[in-house]
Length: 361
Image (cartoon, rainbow, N blue to C red; front, side, top):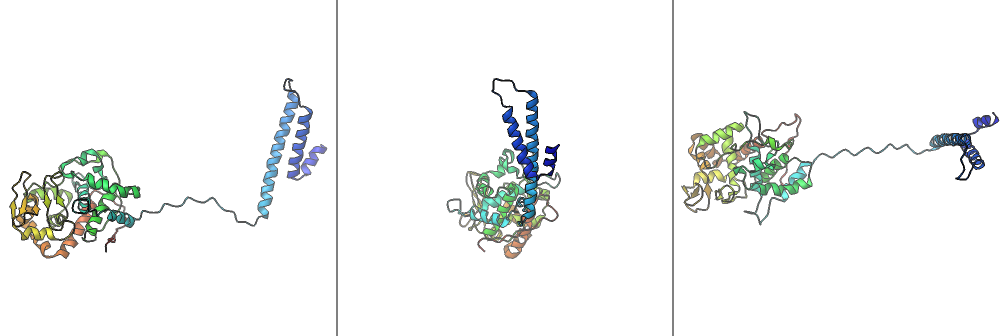
């Protein structure tokens, strides 16, 4: 009883020390050799004391923490919250793409035309009737679509852009490829094209069927309408989009055709229209597919589908407008290009519209 009263009256720290001391004395008194059997009663008492001592010690530690915290003048610091993820800076992504466009060892010194072709072909598979295809799923990453004849050579662009994907792994391939198209247009002197992020990467079974892109060998305007109308474009938009042929050239080892449309294939201009109307075009005599060359220099070419733009009455009307007014062409092309790159994409209602500053501005 006396011991109990003392324990009750003592501060917690003292209780802890005394409990440990008592436990130590009793443990010493009942110590036996390892060959002897120990008494179960003494062992039980020893365990009880140890438990009591630990409990008292825990209490003492708690009391000490409480007392010390009451005396402390230091502020209580909460655990540091995880830093919120920074949103992707698309201007930086744009700049990274722009930085890898020029290369004097590739083609005419620029990857811009093949970047634009990649964006165009990744987007132009949309069908307004079946509501599939388009740039949303970036299915040219998979063999079925990558193997379509119209996409020959575009692995060069995809591989080049993987450098940017490595820098910004959070961007989807669909956003990367269409943004590369925007960068190509603007960095090569074309208009500012509005762009929105929000494409997601799909799976192979999202791949569109072959045959949805225009066939350059078709000289009839109706074929162009059949293809573009399924995307949701009208005659004016069709002619505006074909103005992109001011850039780049055809390659025999890709499309089978050969040569540039204009004398400045790395500068975005309205020259496709002026050349189409201003030169005399004759069929090229060669072993490749049917195409046309300018009679004067034989250095430029037009595809059968291009020639349809000059022969078809409704198409020609817009060819003439754009040949005379490059500002009108730039304005209409920018709108049509944005529409093209957004085919098949379901954007959030508040999706931000970006206008990127060209790095050479």
